Image 1 (cartoon, rainbow, N blue to C red):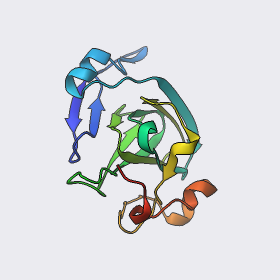
Image 2: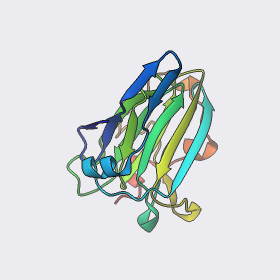
Image 3: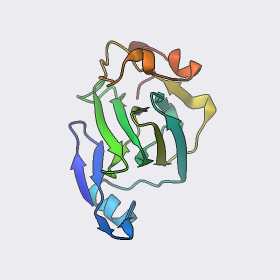
Image 4: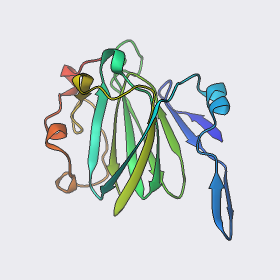
Length: 181
């Protein structure tokens, strides 16, 4: 695998080696020793998967305090724009974001450390999205930042009237009011 450090410290794009032939393909999606040698020790405890249709935006989610999570995300089917927003108040990139296209063709993965809000927008007819987390979900600690907050200026590549989201995400906090790390 190739590990690519993004412009925000701790956020990585991972490109697997994919072996294609007439039967299909093979790739290693996660190899603990290699991951730790390049990124560091993370104890993933759970895998999650979601299926969404075009225009679905999930995020920008995070968990507060002792329940914060690191995530390793990828797309099995379809395409998404995946976004990580730095909520680490002492970071030189506080309030900045990194986005990456993840799809079934490039098979890229995106590592988001603790201290970030995370979200994705589905750009294909449907997408199957999977991710590893290093901490269990804690409903009492969940939080969200508004996807279209003007202080963040995230460039979502579809018209706002095409975006489908939960009521909870529509009423998320402004970035200036977010619980930060």
